[in-house]
View 1 (cartoon, rainbow, N blue to C red):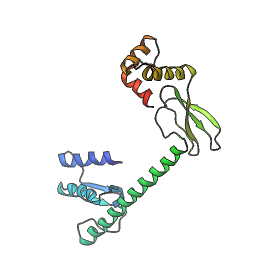
View 2 (spheres, one colour):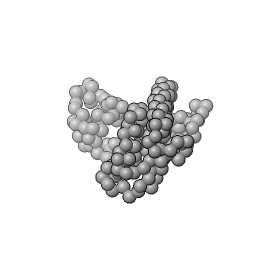
View 3 (tube, rainbow, N blue to C red):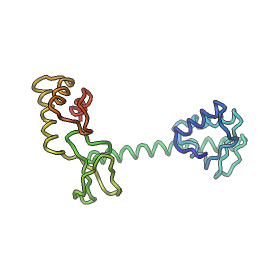
View 4 (cartoon, helix red, strand yellow):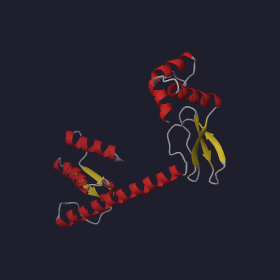
Length: 202
């Protein structure tokens, strides 16, 4: 059995604690692959749970035997701390990169919402294509922006804002009026208070 990701590790630990694990040894590439936890004690705790249940953790690419000797304990502690710091730094870099793209007006993901469309731009800023629901960019250098959708949807969005701001209609009342008019959402469903709220806050 091969596991990847934090959820899979949690399931493995659960199986070990429940006594349902049908293996004796857990092979891990190196200390950092056991988990880049920002708290190094969490990684040690999971290994302890396995050892307590007589499940041995073996690090394949490490130069030490994971047999509890003092050198192995010290090296694992240092490597766990290094892995946690790497994770923290990477998280900060990713966040800064995402903020920069958002400041430049690029879309980071998720559906566009009613009245909007996702448009794919080439590296030079030229419009490449409109992305349909479920489609994603294929090139790292491409970017996605939001643009107004069909006129009928744009007019509906303006009408929703008018009913809410100028006429004081509630979100539920607006949803009922849209349904009476036969207008469907971007998913071709009836309107609800939540979908009207989504338009007003998007």
